[in-house]
Image 1 (tube, helix red, strand yellow):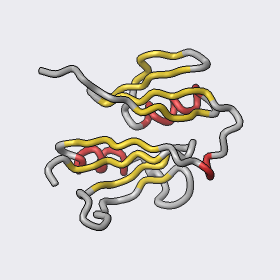
Image 2 (cartoon, rainbow, N blue to C red):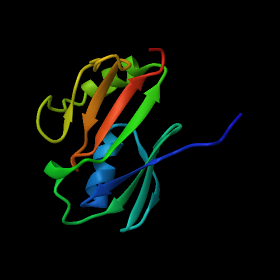
Image 3 (cartoon, rainbow, N blue to C red):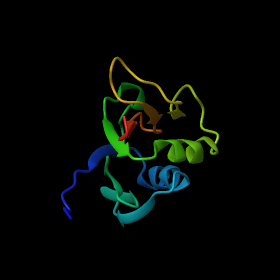
Image 4 (cartoon, rainbow, N blue to C red):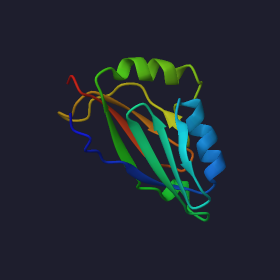
Length: 120
């Protein structure tokens, strides 16, 4: 079994607010300081760095999460009542021009998480 991995590095204007948002999504804090934070949900891991004056509307940060059962995750996250427009937001499934089936989450910092279906 390989333990190779890659983790996303995303901005956070307020580490505590970011941790609270992701806790609603099932992520637990694995490491926390005012300058760096690691959140995890099973094998999924996201890392955040502090950027206090970052503008979420200008974000081009993103990460891909590839799952064998994205339907279950979308169903869980839809129960949170996140909006379908604005920042933050949660989409339903879509398939861009020949790409695998996916849904997207934009976090409060404007970072895009594409949740991609491994089966596709």
